Structures are given as C-alpha cells and as structure tokens.
Length: 552
Image 1 (cartoon, one colour):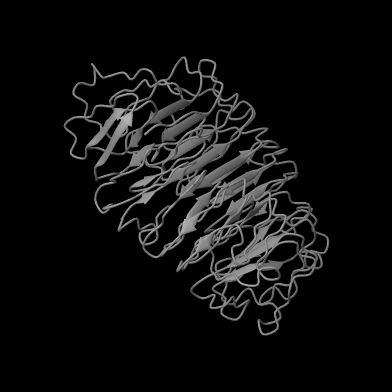
Image 2 (image 1 turned 120 degrees about the vertical axis):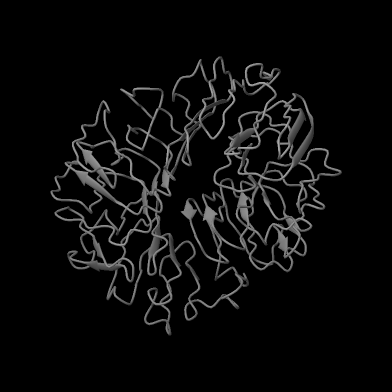
C-alpha cells in the first residue's frame, strides 16, 4: 500500500506484524500487520526512532522487507530471499517518476522470485510513469553503471517478447536509450526525441501481443532504420509487424509517416484528425490507422478533435475526413470523445449508424450525435438491447477524460444495461456504470465524477450515490481515483481503492481520518492476486495484483 503525499492520519489495527512509527507529524500507526505498506514522498512519515536500529519486520508470509531509512526519496530498498512478492525500489532524490514492473515471472531474478515483481524507479526530475505488466521474459538491461541507476532519463530500456502492456505516461522528458545490447544509439540532443536505430524488436515491439502506451508526450518519437528505412523522421513513429497498441496523446503534430507501405500522415492534429496522402483514403492501408487485423487498442485522446479507434478487424473508411468520419464494416468499437465538431456522421443530423458493428459506439459530449437521454450530463442507459449493449466484449473500450464517461476494458462476457437485471442497481447516480461478470479491468481515469470499477464479479449496491457509496458483498476491486465529489463516504474527501473485499465496508466521519467501524474484514484483502500500487494520488489507496494476502 503506497501512501503518496499523505498529510492526514491513518490508524490501522489488527495486523499480524507491527509497524511502529514515532515522531511522525502525520502518524501512520500499524499494528499486527503481516504485509506491506509503501510510503513514498512523505517527508514527515518515515521518522523512525533509529534508522540504524530499524525494526525489521518478520513473520511476513508474502514479502520480506529490507528497508532503509529514506528521506526525500534518496535511499534504496533491497530485497533478498523472496519467495513470493518482491518490491524492488530505487528512490532517487527529487524523483517523481515510477516505473512499475508487475507479473514478470523471469524479470530481474531476485533470489528465486516466483511471483510478482514490483519494480519502481524514481528518476530525478522526471514526471513520467512507465507501467509494465505481465511480462514473461522482458526487461533486459545491460551495461548499466549501477543497478538501474537512471539519472536524467538517459539509460537503457530494452523490451522484447512482452506479452502485455507497456505504458509511458506523463512523459515530459524523453528516454534516451543507450548502451543496450541489441540497440545502437547514435543521436544528439536526445532529451526531447526518441532515437531508435536498428530497432526491429525494440520499441517497434515486434511480436508484442499487447499495448504500448505513450501518454502525454510533449515530445516526438523518432525512429530510424527500423525494418523499413525512414530518413529525416524527426516526427515519425514507425511500427512494423506489431499486433499491439500505440497511444499518443498531446502531440500537436504527431504522426507523419512517409515512404511506408501503410502511409498515414497526420497534420494539424490539434484541430482535426486529417488523413491525407493515403492511397484512396485508406483504400490500401491494411495496417496503419486502418488498423486492419489490429488485435488491440489505438487511442488518441486529449486532442480537440481526436478519434479513438479500438480493435478494428476490418477497414476504416474515411470520406471527407475534414468533417465526417464514416465507419463501415467495423466489428468493434469506435470511441469519439470530446469531438463536438469532428464526429460528424453525415453532418450529425442524420447519424450514420455503424453497420456490422458487434459492439457499441459511444459518443460523449456530442450534442447532436447519439443523444442518450440527456447525455450531456448523465450516461443513462435505457433500451440497451439496441443502444448501449456490450455483447461479447473481448477487449478494450476506453473513454478518457470525460466528465461522465464509461470505460470498459477487457470484458470477456456480456455487459447488460437493461434495467440492471441481476446486475447492479444505481440510484441517483449521475455517473455510475455497472459491469457484470467482467473478468478484467474497468477504468475511469481523470474524471471529476467518475468511479473506477475493476475486476468485480458480485453485485454492487449503490444507494444515494451522489454522497455515499455503500459496497456490500464486494468480491473484487473498487477503484476511485481523483474523485473529490464522487467517492463520498459520509463526506470523505479522499479516495480509497478496494481490492477483492469480501465484506461490507462502512465509512463514517471520513473527513479527516479513515475511521473504520464494524469492518471485520475491512481493508482486508484476502486472496489478492496482484500488486498494490499507489501512483500519483494525494490520498489514494490503490490495491491491485496482490499475489498473497494483504492484511490491514
């Protein structure tokens, strides 16, 4: 559990191992706790009586803690002889970047690790988050002067044969890849541009079956000599033979492909996603931005006129793209967010419904497109059998940065929104969405009034949700991030993430302190199969991917 930038008091009791903190202006008192608590960037938290004679925690069935007193993120966690979970963490001074590696069965073999590795590297003066998960044999770093001592984002990342997700988010600076065994870097002024040379597998991520995310990158990714030769590609992202996802956000002049078999040139991205110089408007573009046979998601968000495309197994047809997006023969989901003038299907008045579309096309904040019963303020689902019916959802539909947006991710079953039959009842909820029998993740990120639900298989009962969320019989994860007004547990100002709770959680008087009463298994995460990660939350508790029992 990572408490980042916390200033309030958390009182925990009935934990099987003891964390004693004294002389802390913001007291964290943990008693009888058998698992792990992570606290980063809390200058007033880690005040142990004596860092030398630090109380080493024993009887931890899941994690061996070898902690060193750290102040202002300058010390290092060292772990050894770990049989279950390894949390390897290098904290640099003035660090604001987290690199998470989870579910890497053969990554950084730390003393015969058999389970999850949470690898967090905090770079100096880097506000970037890199999320790596489910990597069977990934992350090979060679010739690093010190154990992942990456200062100023100038070291090596080589990712190959990754079966899951690569996420680069909030990338104000840029990685400079160098001294990699399979990468020869020859570039100047790499602080703002990715330069990749001979990268048939690196960052092209050849034979990669999942997602590569570039979020909030103000700079440009430049590839050179990658399978197909591209010269002077200062604004070019070349991906060849990749059955995964590339997410590029906030790139004003993002993608300019030239001399490529599937040419897609994007210009004036800040206003309109204009597709030009493509043979017959994507007539012969079988891989790029037609995304033919694309097994994952391509998202373009945070643009004034950005189109989000997700898992299209057929051709995208764009006719008169400056004002109209016409999609036919699409077997998946098309998401258009905050496109008041872009998503004009036959000029909005006569909306062109997508033919042969097995999923749902949801348009938010489009006053003239798909008016869903007062869609401007609330996503109200009615008559879902023909409107918002998510059937056989096998992958990801993401709605990001909408005030009332629904995000569906990796649903292996049918999500029904028909009077909440055997699902979830929402009463007076302005932005609540129900997901039944969803085996994966449902994310609501960066929404002022959005709830994040993840991996739940039981009923959620919400009553008077505008002020209270009462969770009963919750067997999975509840995620509430950055929702100052949504997650209001009896006027609770901060956010709590619940993971696989089997009992009822009661919250009272949460304004200043998380006071838990009548919670026999509150904050008790039994059989948690993932990692507990708290990233960039002022007072948020995020639980996910715990390989063992987390007792609080």
